[in-house]
Image 1 (tube, helix red, strand yellow):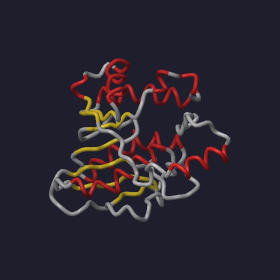
Image 2 (cartoon, rainbow, N blue to C red):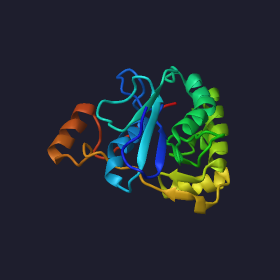
Image 3 (cartoon, helix red, strand yellow):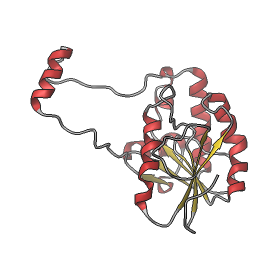
Image 4 (cartoon, rainbow, N blue to C red):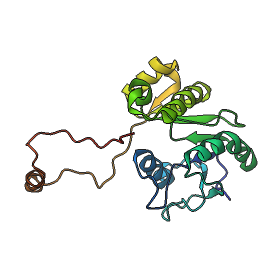
Length: 214
């Protein structure tokens, strides 16, 4: 356990949905947390960070100090229990000034202010697309977390409006911070695109869906 050098605000980041293992989840939330941790050092400001995550889950290129739980938090129910029962104790123990929940939910009982990122509210808008247990968890815990958090991060102006309309959070408590774009994503030469379309039997114009099918 430890924190990065410096004497500034001590920020804890709940990264239990981050994975350094190939077999574990690597969907959008994982990518968000991973790249957030990779680039936080460029933000400056003299902040100190402690990354909270499961044992053995820290990718080798993440150099922030970490506190790795021995709880098997790759199991969803165990992670939820850890977030709400153990995390507040951990935050007090390490003297965190702020905790960031980067995936919809923050600890409901906590010794420090909470900031939560909300990526979308599809589990409220399209409940039939989610497994009942997952939908219940996200709906209840996101709503409670949003109301208790000091600030909310929405990844688009649309999501910010949804948070206000569906969760009843005043817009002045919501900050829009857009997702970044990995340098790997860039326009390809026209001939490569044409060759790909031909291989896949695609027309000149098509829609590509890259979201998670819950």
